[in-house]
Amino acid sequence: MIKDITLGQYLPGKSVIHKLDPRTKLLMTVCFMVVLFILNSILSLFLSMIIVLICYRVANISYKYAFKGIKPVLYIVLFTVVLNVFFTGGEPLLTWKFITISKEGVNAAILVSLRVLTLITSASIMTYTTTPIMLTDAIEKLFNPLKKIKVPVHEMAMMMTIALRFIPTLIDETDKIMKAQAARGADIGTGNLLQRAKSFIPILVPLFISSFKRADDLAIAMESRCYRGGEGRTSMRILKFTIKDFRAFCVFILFAVILFLIQIFI
Image (cartoon, rainbow, N blue to C red; front, side, top):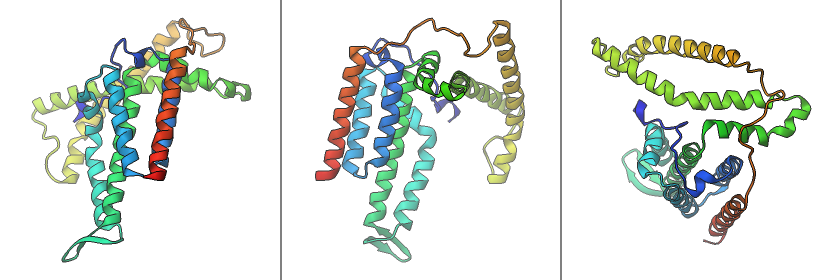
């Protein structure tokens, strides 16, 4: 399960989506998430998922990465589905003893599951096709106006990107520690809830120590390279919007309008 977390990984490629300006991808991802929260139609959300899967195909990213991205949250989604199906009132579809399944509950369960799965897969495709450095530059450029009110935009963008960048590293570290503890005879993930929680203590302690050591090494490395924040700092690659970004945003707006029209008229 630990290895299934793919957030923060970058998959090199030469697709159209890889070549888009990172600001375009970031803006489209955020806008798409807003659209998903506004949509209340099962058909619209289902088509949104189809659009995301088409983007995976365009980016030449295997669907197994999309599945790996949603696998860690499947239990949460299933739990939410059960709550909506059995505890949402409305017109009953099925009644058996004290269990009642309503039409509204089934509808709400489908809406929530589609929305969550589409959110995760759409956010993942942005990290799959954008390097952490480019993502840092995109965040900094987009929030540049906030510098006028003394907001430390560069430092915030750097912290967010470092956190995103080290997710795969921490996952690998956790997996190694779990295997090392299992090789020493540790019983991990079995027993009742309290026993499972206690079994993870031998994993969390070395993981925290390793994380703090890695953070200290990173700070020393940045200081030795004379890193002093964003003041007077230049970028090796200058971000520029191109006609491809304009076309991509137009296509996104077209799809968003179609989804809203489907929700209104169907």
